Image (spheres, rainbow, N blue to C red):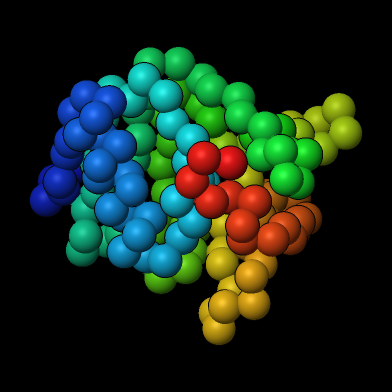
Length: 135
């Protein structure tokens, strides 16, 4: 899945280091991507394109906001300051449906809110601390 001009870290430990460094650099909550069994994480700085490959799909419940989120084995998106756009591979459960999350934005200036936008144009807003590391 490597892209031309990209940084690629293979294996869970090295992949997680790169994922955390990307989230930190772009001022995104560190618990936003609760990954397990990472195969590869890559990032192309010139375009902001990032990709994550896991061995299998993962479902995670963010307990503070009672939100179940599904992370496919392949996740891609474009990262910029306080934002991931054109996100693919992430879905959040709403009632009985699993609409794809297409964009995640953290307020700037910081108000303590994270916004999740679906392809259907629906936006859900949650407190940023719900997505801190370990949540």
